[in-house]
Image 1: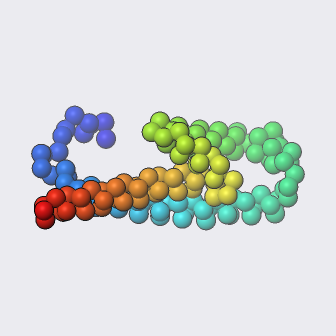
Image 2 (image 1 turned 180 degrees about the vertical axis):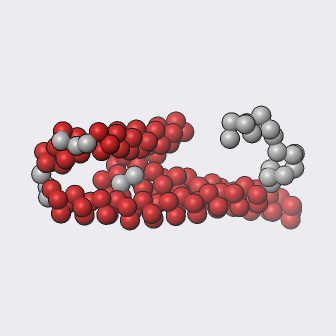
Length: 141
């Protein structure tokens, strides 16, 4: 992406509301798929933790940090940093969305970010559809 940063698309391509709507719909579908996969993964993680540790938070902490192999510690840090990076990305545009992702986290895990990003794209689709209706109304008048 950095290599293509300075390249602009030709004028007239992708600027119309229909193209924006198609792009937003494609991105929304991608977020929906990643969210579904994330919810399934989160469910598996919760079931494994429930089976192994029950509700004992101290045992969980010991298992993933205190007595864990270096690889497990690295994966724990990596997962947290990646999740927080996506939350910061969301928060850079809308703080309320980032807070919603954090609140939703206990329910659907990291898929909470996909849910929020999916909602953003659905909002973009609705706004574009409304703009198209307004434009069509002006053309008919």
